[in-house]
Length: 398
Image (spheres, rainbow, N blue to C red):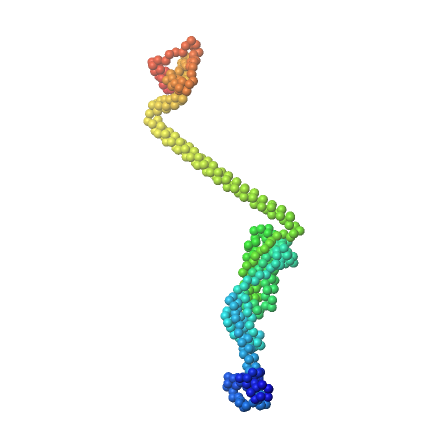
């Protein structure tokens, strides 16, 4: 079909669509949506006035599309663990919680999404690897004027996204500076042995507390969670000497523990012996006191009897004393008036002693000594002679 045919461009014929017709229909739809009334002849062909209406409707549609896109750009989503900080013309407006949100699009309002649950790390004295040292940060002076090499890492989270964004220009740099300030203050007030050996946990706790106080004064909105000491050692130039010092300290502790163990073994024994001797002394004292008191009481009783009958009491004391003395001896020498010594052999005691020695397998030979007047044989003791001797003893006692 030639182009000048009246049916060319219609729907039921093949060929390109009529652009004016498309624009006209689009204008009508936009006008109906906006509540406007279309101008010009909608049934006739394309005229200059209709073309102007179509162009005007297209501009309105583009403006409407631009406005829709601009409004849609205000939608944003805050993920879990994050906060949305809304700024209106550069001023803080509000903080939004996780979820889909909307704000007035740019240039009126803007949103800063801040991660408040993520753990952030700042390294002091090294970067990435402890072998990659930063001497200007790691070397510190102790209270006893020694130099130590300290490497540690700081972990922190955000507790106030508004303070983190607006109160400080470089909050992460502030954390690094606060860490250096705190660790140098703590190390500068401690001795080298304390820093290298038993004081690591205490130093980490003091550094954490000092850093938190400094950042709170700055209103940085940062919460220090962990201070990890990666390495505390002497400088490399004197490392060998300090290793000797550490070994000497370990030997000192070992000897100290051995001495304490020996003391724990010896001291209780000595205390036990001292306690036993003390108790024995107390027992001996009580025994002596009791014996003395008993002797004094017996003496008072004898004195009372002596005052009643002196002669009888003297004889009784004499007989008791002689019995006590003679019961423990096997020989008795009696002094006679004639000047000769008579050897008295208690046969019963000798027989008892001889029987005990024979039962044990030994033989006892008894050889009596004769007196000076008779060397042939000793006199035989008879009951009458024994009575006469006792009577003489009584007379001599008188």
